[in-house]
Amino acid sequence: ITYVSQVIITILAYFFNILLIFIVQTSKNKEIRTYRILMTYFGLSDLYYTTVHCVTYPFGVNIQGDNMFKIQIPENFGHAFIVRGHGIYRELMRMGLYFGAYTHTFPILIFHFLYRLMAIKYTHLLQYFKMFIFPLVLATAASNASWFSIVNWLFYPDEEILRILTPIYNGSIPGLVVHTMDSAAKHAQALYFTGATFEGPRWANLAGAGIISSSTNTSSFKLLYI
Image (tube, rainbow, N blue to C red; front, side, top):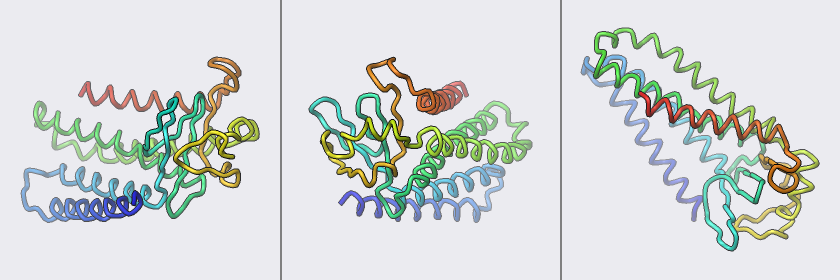
Protein backbone atom coordinates (compact mmCIF):
# COMPACT_ATOMS: atom_id res chain seq x y z
CA ILE A 1 0.00 0.00 0.00
CA THR A 2 2.76 2.42 0.93
CA TYR A 3 4.57 1.88 -2.37
CA VAL A 4 1.34 2.34 -4.35
CA SER A 5 0.83 5.61 -2.49
CA GLN A 6 4.38 6.58 -3.37
CA VAL A 7 3.73 5.93 -7.07
CA ILE A 8 0.59 8.08 -6.96
CA ILE A 9 2.49 10.90 -5.21
CA THR A 10 5.25 10.59 -7.82
CA ILE A 11 2.76 10.94 -10.68
CA LEU A 12 1.24 14.02 -9.05
CA ALA A 13 4.70 15.49 -8.46
CA TYR A 14 5.57 15.01 -12.14
CA PHE A 15 2.31 16.62 -13.22
CA PHE A 16 2.57 19.71 -11.03
CA ASN A 17 6.28 20.30 -11.67
CA ILE A 18 5.86 19.97 -15.43
CA LEU A 19 2.84 22.30 -15.17
CA LEU A 20 4.93 24.79 -13.19
CA ILE A 21 7.72 24.75 -15.76
CA PHE A 22 5.22 25.15 -18.60
CA ILE A 23 3.52 28.12 -16.93
CA VAL A 24 6.72 30.04 -16.14
CA GLN A 25 8.24 29.34 -19.55
CA THR A 26 5.16 30.37 -21.51
CA SER A 27 4.25 33.36 -19.36
CA LYS A 28 4.58 36.68 -21.18
CA ASN A 29 4.79 38.63 -17.95
CA LYS A 30 8.08 40.52 -18.18
CA GLU A 31 8.12 41.21 -14.44
CA ILE A 32 9.17 37.66 -13.53
CA ARG A 33 12.38 38.04 -15.57
CA THR A 34 15.16 36.04 -13.89
CA TYR A 35 12.64 34.47 -11.53
CA ARG A 36 11.55 32.39 -14.52
CA ILE A 37 14.97 30.73 -14.61
CA LEU A 38 14.97 30.16 -10.87
CA MET A 39 11.54 28.51 -10.85
CA THR A 40 12.41 26.36 -13.85
CA TYR A 41 15.56 25.18 -12.08
CA PHE A 42 13.48 24.46 -8.98
CA GLY A 43 11.01 22.39 -11.01
CA LEU A 44 13.73 20.41 -12.80
CA SER A 45 15.49 19.70 -9.51
CA ASP A 46 12.26 18.47 -7.95
CA LEU A 47 11.62 16.22 -10.94
CA TYR A 48 15.06 14.68 -10.44
CA TYR A 49 14.49 14.23 -6.70
CA THR A 50 11.06 12.70 -7.31
CA THR A 51 12.54 10.21 -9.78
CA VAL A 52 15.38 9.18 -7.47
CA HIS A 53 13.04 8.85 -4.48
CA CYS A 54 10.61 6.70 -6.43
CA VAL A 55 13.19 4.24 -7.74
CA THR A 56 15.13 3.96 -4.46
CA TYR A 57 12.20 4.33 -2.01
CA PRO A 58 14.17 4.65 1.24
CA PHE A 59 12.06 3.29 4.06
CA GLY A 60 12.96 2.61 7.65
CA VAL A 61 11.83 2.18 11.21
CA ASN A 62 12.76 4.11 14.31
CA ILE A 63 12.77 1.90 17.38
CA GLN A 64 12.61 3.61 20.77
CA GLY A 65 12.16 1.17 23.60
CA ASP A 66 8.95 -0.77 23.04
CA ASN A 67 7.60 1.76 20.55
CA MET A 68 8.09 1.53 16.82
CA PHE A 69 7.33 4.32 14.38
CA LYS A 70 7.26 4.08 10.59
CA ILE A 71 9.39 6.77 9.01
CA GLN A 72 11.08 7.36 5.69
CA ILE A 73 14.71 7.37 6.80
CA PRO A 74 16.66 6.19 8.67
CA GLU A 75 16.53 3.25 11.07
CA ASN A 76 18.15 4.00 14.40
CA PHE A 77 19.29 1.39 16.88
CA GLY A 78 21.19 2.90 19.77
CA HIS A 79 24.40 4.25 18.23
CA ALA A 80 23.64 2.76 14.83
CA PHE A 81 22.16 4.30 11.71
CA ILE A 82 21.12 2.16 8.75
CA VAL A 83 19.16 2.88 5.60
CA ARG A 84 18.47 0.99 2.39
CA GLY A 85 16.39 1.52 -0.69
CA HIS A 86 13.28 -0.64 -1.01
CA GLY A 87 12.31 0.43 -4.51
CA ILE A 88 13.33 -0.72 -7.97
CA TYR A 89 17.05 -0.12 -7.39
CA ARG A 90 18.28 -1.30 -4.02
CA GLU A 91 22.05 -1.24 -4.35
CA LEU A 92 24.10 0.83 -1.92
CA MET A 93 25.12 3.46 -4.47
CA ARG A 94 21.46 4.31 -5.07
CA MET A 95 21.20 5.57 -1.50
CA GLY A 96 24.07 7.91 -2.26
CA LEU A 97 22.06 9.23 -5.20
CA TYR A 98 19.05 9.75 -2.94
CA PHE A 99 20.98 11.59 -0.23
CA GLY A 100 22.65 13.73 -2.89
CA ALA A 101 19.30 14.64 -4.46
CA TYR A 102 17.89 15.47 -1.02
CA THR A 103 20.46 18.25 -0.57
CA HIS A 104 19.31 20.16 -3.66
CA THR A 105 16.71 21.85 -1.49
CA PHE A 106 19.27 23.77 0.57
CA PRO A 107 21.04 25.88 -2.08
CA ILE A 108 17.86 26.34 -4.12
CA LEU A 109 15.94 27.72 -1.14
CA ILE A 110 18.86 29.95 -0.13
CA PHE A 111 19.05 31.49 -3.62
CA HIS A 112 15.26 31.67 -3.74
CA PHE A 113 15.16 33.69 -0.51
CA LEU A 114 18.08 35.79 -1.75
CA TYR A 115 16.09 36.66 -4.87
CA ARG A 116 13.09 37.67 -2.76
CA LEU A 117 15.33 39.84 -0.58
CA MET A 118 16.67 41.62 -3.63
CA ALA A 119 13.18 41.98 -5.09
CA ILE A 120 11.93 43.67 -1.89
CA LYS A 121 14.89 45.74 -0.70
CA TYR A 122 17.38 45.93 -3.55
CA THR A 123 15.34 46.03 -6.73
CA HIS A 124 18.12 47.84 -8.58
CA LEU A 125 20.28 44.71 -8.21
CA LEU A 126 17.80 42.30 -9.79
CA GLN A 127 19.29 42.94 -13.21
CA TYR A 128 22.46 41.22 -11.98
CA PHE A 129 20.76 38.16 -10.51
CA LYS A 130 21.45 36.09 -13.63
CA MET A 131 25.06 36.10 -12.49
CA PHE A 132 23.96 33.97 -9.50
CA ILE A 133 22.54 31.13 -11.60
CA PHE A 134 25.92 29.53 -12.30
CA PRO A 135 26.94 29.67 -8.59
CA LEU A 136 23.55 28.10 -7.80
CA VAL A 137 24.29 25.19 -10.14
CA LEU A 138 27.76 24.80 -8.61
CA ALA A 139 26.36 24.91 -5.06
CA THR A 140 23.76 22.29 -5.94
CA ALA A 141 26.38 20.02 -7.50
CA ALA A 142 28.70 20.46 -4.51
CA SER A 143 25.94 19.61 -2.02
CA ASN A 144 24.99 16.57 -4.07
CA ALA A 145 28.58 15.36 -4.31
CA SER A 146 29.18 15.92 -0.58
CA TRP A 147 26.32 13.79 0.71
CA PHE A 148 26.76 11.22 -2.06
CA SER A 149 30.38 10.80 -0.95
CA ILE A 150 29.41 10.51 2.72
CA VAL A 151 26.97 7.69 2.07
CA ASN A 152 29.23 5.77 -0.30
CA TRP A 153 32.51 6.16 1.59
CA LEU A 154 32.03 7.28 5.19
CA PHE A 155 28.85 5.23 5.69
CA TYR A 156 30.11 2.24 3.76
CA PRO A 157 29.70 -1.11 5.63
CA ASP A 158 32.86 -2.79 6.92
CA GLU A 159 33.49 -6.04 8.79
CA GLU A 160 33.29 -4.43 12.23
CA ILE A 161 29.94 -2.75 11.73
CA LEU A 162 28.41 -5.80 10.06
CA ARG A 163 29.56 -7.96 12.98
CA ILE A 164 28.18 -5.61 15.64
CA LEU A 165 24.89 -5.05 13.82
CA THR A 166 24.35 -8.75 13.08
CA PRO A 167 21.48 -8.97 15.66
CA ILE A 168 19.58 -6.39 13.60
CA TYR A 169 20.07 -8.18 10.32
CA ASN A 170 19.42 -11.73 11.57
CA GLY A 171 16.19 -10.69 13.29
CA SER A 172 17.34 -10.95 16.92
CA ILE A 173 16.32 -7.28 17.27
CA PRO A 174 12.80 -7.11 15.82
CA GLY A 175 11.56 -4.29 13.65
CA LEU A 176 8.85 -3.46 11.13
CA VAL A 177 11.39 -3.82 8.33
CA VAL A 178 12.48 -7.42 7.76
CA HIS A 179 16.24 -7.69 7.34
CA THR A 180 18.40 -10.59 6.24
CA MET A 181 22.13 -11.16 6.42
CA ASP A 182 22.19 -11.34 2.61
CA SER A 183 21.12 -7.69 2.36
CA ALA A 184 23.26 -6.41 5.25
CA ALA A 185 26.08 -5.09 3.07
CA LYS A 186 23.61 -3.23 0.83
CA HIS A 187 22.72 -0.77 3.58
CA ALA A 188 24.33 2.60 4.06
CA GLN A 189 25.19 2.40 7.73
CA ALA A 190 27.04 4.12 10.51
CA LEU A 191 28.03 2.98 13.97
CA TYR A 192 29.21 5.90 16.03
CA PHE A 193 30.60 3.97 19.02
CA THR A 194 31.49 0.30 19.30
CA GLY A 195 30.70 0.29 23.04
CA ALA A 196 28.77 2.63 25.28
CA THR A 197 28.52 6.32 24.39
CA PHE A 198 32.00 7.80 23.80
CA GLU A 199 33.58 4.33 24.01
CA GLY A 200 35.32 3.12 20.87
CA PRO A 201 34.44 6.02 18.55
CA ARG A 202 34.35 5.30 14.83
CA TRP A 203 35.73 8.51 13.44
CA ALA A 204 34.70 8.09 9.80
CA ASN A 205 31.06 7.59 10.76
CA LEU A 206 31.18 10.48 13.23
CA ALA A 207 32.76 12.71 10.59
CA GLY A 208 30.00 11.84 8.12
CA ALA A 209 27.29 12.58 10.67
CA GLY A 210 29.05 15.82 11.59
CA ILE A 211 29.20 17.01 7.98
CA ILE A 212 25.52 16.21 7.43
CA SER A 213 24.51 17.96 10.65
CA SER A 214 26.68 21.03 10.08
CA SER A 215 25.59 21.50 6.47
CA THR A 216 21.93 21.20 7.43
CA ASN A 217 22.28 23.63 10.33
CA THR A 218 24.31 26.08 8.26
CA SER A 219 21.69 26.08 5.51
CA SER A 220 18.91 26.61 8.05
CA PHE A 221 20.82 29.50 9.62
CA LYS A 222 21.34 31.15 6.23
CA LEU A 223 17.63 30.88 5.45
CA LEU A 224 16.73 32.46 8.81
CA TYR A 225 19.33 35.19 8.32
CA ILE A 226 18.12 36.08 4.85
